[in-house]
Image 1 (tube, rainbow, N blue to C red):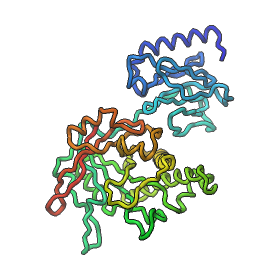
Image 2 (cartoon, one colour):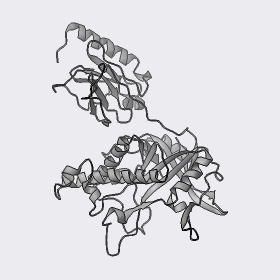
Image 3 (cartoon, rainbow, N blue to C red):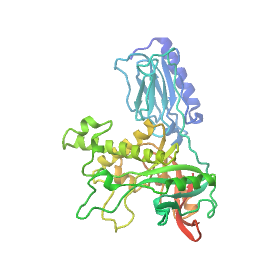
Image 4 (cartoon, helix red, strand yellow):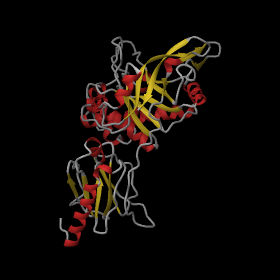
Length: 404
């Protein structure tokens, strides 16, 4: 790559400025390109874990990337013909990757999710830069509350209807969190089978979701939703319908299996969102439940022994949430998530950590890197069971939750 003397001087100046302020750069900061066609951005994820080290990237107008300090190199557009020059870049605060933006609005992502662009869209004026927007964490640190789903439903034979059996208002006093389960996987296998033959045989909907939602709203809690993920069944139309439909129908090859798994996760979330909407229930934050059965009495494991298949399910589900405009997160543990999706699966989404046995341990999990997984930042930690007042008297057990 060739630069005239003026351009070299600008590169050095921007590099010096970035180095001097590296530890002070906010997690969502970026710099627009200078007239000399060079942009600089801090590698936010690297700075967060090792602030004393000078860490930054530079991008040239042809998409070439230069890394300094501990900044990771994840690829570039250098030597690739571009429709328009690159004018800026921004760091992904979750993965340490980065995005490049061209003057026509085209986006190039490297170890960062592609969320759309303005490429090929007529613009009134050229794009001159970009900036990342931090995740919108709805919880205030130190808040607590509960999560409930179909186990907290009560069936009324007289009216043939379900109602919410746990009172989110009374005990414990909810200070702002209510997470509601929308869907689940039926663990009762058809006789003589080792896996479910279809979606309809395995898919369950929380029958008292609306009642729990109204109860949560009346408590004044910040309400979010969760849906359970699991591996694809033996055969179902949802495996062959979706963004990967073309390769999903390419026969019993490994690549086709991965495509089917992606479509399965994509459609599984679509079904969950559609069911919630049918109940008048909505949330900007959706958690994806990625876990194995918690008792040896279960005869069916939720996931494939092929971690690549499972990772594709998670990828399809998270991508569907993005296309719908929702914030996604993952519920799991540091042990179960890599066991299911593989050690290299790193969606970089907010995480909800399960397994704390006390309030103090829940708070400790928030800041313990050993408890994290999937390249995510902890937003919630699930604590121990607590007694909650049951509608009509008595008590029921619900999970407690703590906001990081």
